[in-house]
Image 1: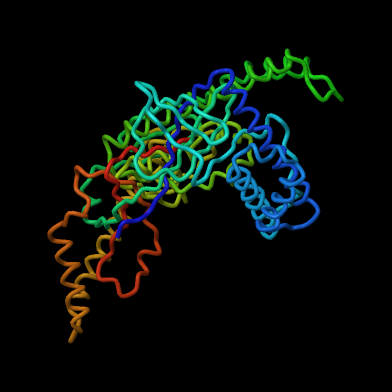
Image 2: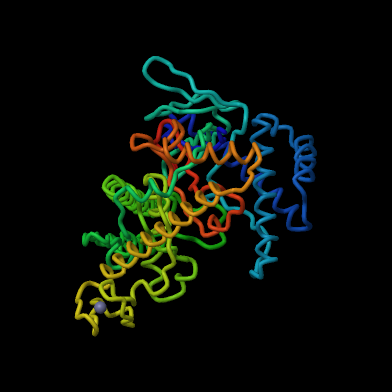
Length: 452
Ligand SMILES: [Zn+2]
């Protein structure tokens, strides 16, 4: 069955001065409407319907709002309502939440055209993005857009404009057998603060720590901003705005560098090893100690995400005791974070602690795969020995066995590309399943873009 998924492409916009003014003005109006909604939501819980009704009243009071695309303004109601719902959920989960806050000029950076009011046209060699009530804006389409465009978000960063195009695509879902995953080359990956990754093949990559390395530059920019900031003034000076832009640019550059590094490394790993075993880290729990800044600077979550859509399969394993167990003999060697070398008192193995952990991860991951494979074999055998199977059961078991023996077109072959999938333990609990399969979504043209 083809499955619908959303894919987001991010393209740079090149507006001229006049067009930029229009974009900026639209952003300001959206912020104004957003803040009016928030003022209403601060008094009582409002549903999306309430907000839409309020928007109609607002439009009658303020006639100039008719000069802006209606669906775009309606999307702000959805934005506020979603934020409100998230706050209520957080409150239920025991977090100390306040109210929605009014957004300041620099904090509102995005507006959205949903379903209508946009089109992309080709004029000569360049492409133009047409937005209702705004007009044409040059766009650099550096890659083909696949699928039906559902919405376009216009995002402003420090000094650049981007269009994030959300497309709906159909991808054929197929199942990938564990017996096939086992055949691919595999590697265990240990993520760390000192070494960004340590692979079980013995190679390591140092953590670039772009944010920590540029802290002195950030501090200087912050000092400059605070020197130029004047209290109790509605409009800050031009020199303050210049300093702010400089500060934003530094952060943007750091984020870009980190993204580039992660893309290069994840591509390098997944090209060599299509199957990756990785620890299932709870990063939010780890960010409470002295290493918090460095952990956040590493951006592990982004890296794992990139691995997941580039590799054939990413299998997460429990991080329990991976750095304690000796990878050669299995003896437990407890150590503090400061101990960088793993020294086994039992077998005398002396290697880097991260290398030891990576080897353990590889071993545990591979064992897990074998266990899953055995279970799948057993379930197939059980399915063979069904006594007096009904005609439906007969055809089902036949089909599954056929699939396992002769991979059909929708099965994953070496040439096909796919997004990776996390094998979960609950798959072991499948009832009445004739085989244990790992779901994989195959996409006709793999070039998944996470956009952010
Ligand atoms: Zn040992």
